[in-house]
Amino acid sequence: GLMAGSFALALRRAGLVKHVVAFSPSERTTRRALELGIIDQRADTAAQAAQGSDVVLLGVPVRSTLSCLQDIRDHLAPDALLMDVGSTKGDVIAAAQQALGSRIGQFLPAHPIAGKELSGIDHADAALYQQRITILTPLPANTPTQIERARHVWQAVGSQVTTMDPTQHDAALAAVSHL
Image (cartoon, rainbow, N blue to C red; front, side):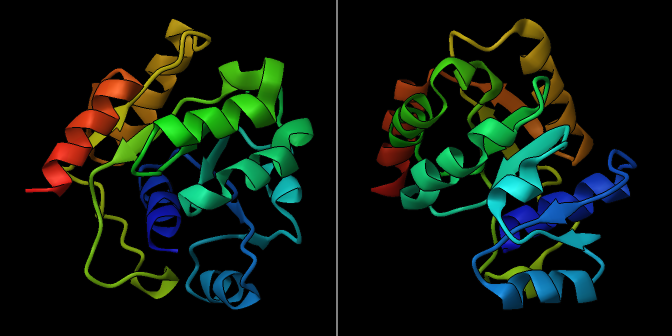
């Protein structure tokens, strides 16, 4: 959709990707992403999309995080960086802990504060993350190298990157959403 498609376009524009593979339960979405040149290959499953990838971005509704992580867990490369774009972190982290078990250190939660009034792959925009804030909410299992790698990726797509504790993130964003 919008978030993952924009991320792929921005990484491509920054010269950080050679090959983009995507999965969506909606065949129309991945077909359209191919037509638009956002991705290079459609995968039949989330596991297939994750297999062999250096960076894996979950662009799924928060309620779908657990099942998606369960699908890809055994297909992640040992050094793959796994991130999400969900707007809440507590529930996403709980899902990741349940799904990933000992591989939780590969998951670095992220929340780009970006979007548009229109959603979907047709509105993907390589400039979506430029001059926007992306909040990383590192886990105790994340290494300094991995945190720096995530920071570099988000900065390469134009984001200003900051870090927050996941609980503080959810409290702060909940307060803002009520204003």
